[in-house]
Image (cartoon, rainbow, N blue to C red):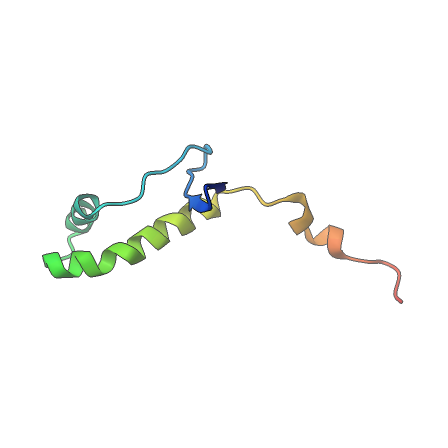
Length: 78
């Protein structure tokens, strides 16, 4: 994810910006999964679905070199 005006924008594995999920899209996803839902439930699930979408985008994001465990290991004991 890249910072744009102080807001973290979710990105897909190609680095392209992902759109945030809207109520209609969430309704369609729930219907495809066969999950019964009311309009009130969809509205309550929407914030969590947006968080989950951002988490999925981060899974495919490459880690910085500094996150490599071999770089944090010090052979010499002090």
